[in-house]
Amino acid sequence: MRIVSLLPAATDIVAELGRLPDLVGRTHECDWPAEVATVPVVTTSEVDADRMSSREISAAVGAGHQGSSLYGLDTETLAGLAPDLVLTQDLCEVCAVSYRRVSEAVRVMDAGPRVLSLEPRTLAEVLDTVRVVGDALGVPDVAAARTAALRRRLDEVRRRVAGRARPAVLAIEWLDPVWPAGHWVPEQIELAGGVPLLAGAGEHTAAIEWRLVLDARPEVIVLLPCGFPPDRTRAELALLTERTGWRDLPAVRAGAVWVLDGPAYFNRPGPRVVRGAEVLAHVLHGAYPDVTAAEAAPVTPPRPGTPPPTGSARSTTGSSAP
Image (cartoon, rainbow, N blue to C red):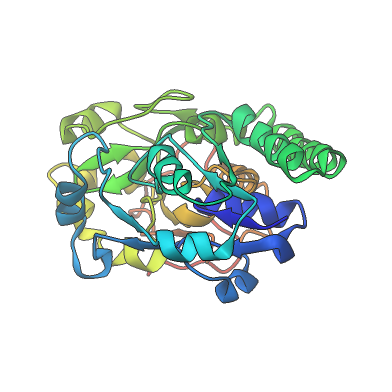
């Protein structure tokens, strides 16, 4: 079967199912695992994120994540790849090419491939997409085994943090304007032994006023901007640290502000969200000593004489503030 993935999370699922040799096309954002680098790219971005600030990117995509023209789709290359299955989504047009645009593109192909749209909003739905893709690829038994293994890892996260104090955690998926992380991220926080703030499980969030962050008084803040690797997040920390009241937040006073790898473990609804829950369990409770500084690094040390928030843990893996 010839597969084209128009969603980075779908590429992750194809890899999880052991079907990367069948992947013939991908998006420009599909960057894991490393071997996908040789797979032809069929999309482009209309936003030059490398040259734009967070505020400029936000303005370009428009309020409310309405960005139907954000991605270009190379329909000629797509047709030439002759896929049997195209994996896409219709959850967020800022995240990938929409199902509507893909459907329009394949309608004119001589032998139209099957188009499968993946739209998970919760952790359970994320895991269910592994089964859905496995069925489409004809490997339901492999999908069932991989899904069961992922669920066992989530159960282990619960076990490791059981009975611990649960700090209040704010996950931020965009820095300017401030945008709390929704969908499956609140569930990742709960699994990891925290209490999510300003967003609920499955919620499609929106930008919020800064005063809501101040009023929430988070004990832990995790920064995982959508599409930003940790280095880019650290380069834009001033967007938060220079805001009025930042230094007085409990999380900041306790040195419990962390930069996480959003694209790898939190922004994309694929199997690696399970690792995201493990990373959070380490951030909050020191529960996974194998977490590396590339996965989670504290922003600043606590102020002298300030106790850490209840239930939090400093990294024991050599992480250091940038």
